Image (cartoon, rainbow, N blue to C red):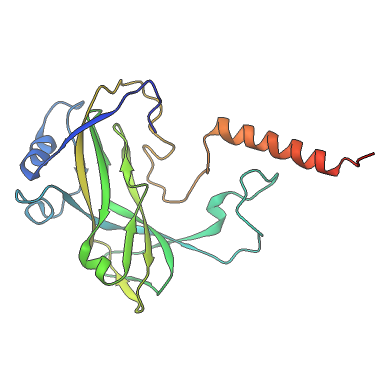
Length: 225
């Protein structure tokens, strides 16, 4: 998330031809990178204002846990990644998401945004009508680089087969003004290709909450007179 002094002002949404122009720019600081694009005419059309993205090979499924709750302030709490088991699904194979199941998936495409663009991730309406909700952090900050982690949940009543290479989501790009390039505040997942969750809060917030929790537990144990 951008810091308060980094004022963000979003303007118009890029149309299909504008997205294609940004993909073709030669200047590294201005070029939008989305790679690989398996079918440019299919994924990016001039009569639309979005770029389709596909499912990649990496998935993570939540596993049953004996912990009483996910608690970042608890001393010795296991890493969030231990709540998942990963699975690699090659081209031609599938993963089945059952009703009310939640899994994580990665985009096939590696994405890098220049500092004057941000993006939103939205699910495809056809999948939504089948009950598949495709979400992520929704907003992708300027300067982000990496694959996108998609949160997939089947709210329907029938199992759904998912295949690497399927189009499941779309990106909408917005121009951004008045954003200073500092190299900071791009988020803990910028540059990442790992879909497993890391920490719930920024380090400073985590440390403060941990100290408050420790003081509260100590006060509660102190006998009153």
